[in-house]
Image 1: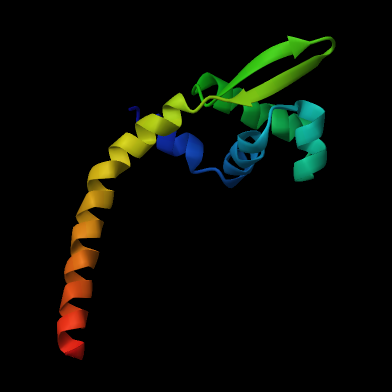
Image 2 (image 1 turned 135 degrees about the vertical axis):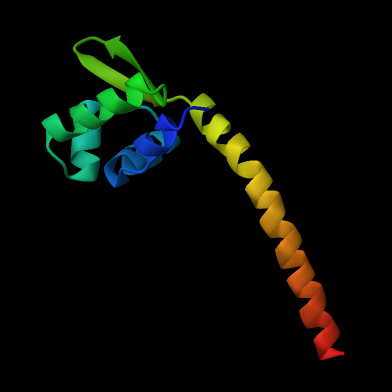
Length: 103
């Protein structure tokens, strides 16, 4: 996984776009209306997301329809997994300690 994925995801507007695309595919205009941002701003962020592989685009008549591509997110999730397991172990140990203190 590229560290660039984290740079792409660090931008709040790009995360909002990904959230919108998680529900369904959207045209640029639908994203503009839904997110309340200008068309040039949305297009700029979609270009970054597309170049990083987070979204794909297809042309339908005169519109570009964007779709979420989950593969880069799986890579991020895979990178995070060892940290998630580490924290789970620590939190489980804390829970056992707190339970023993109650008794």
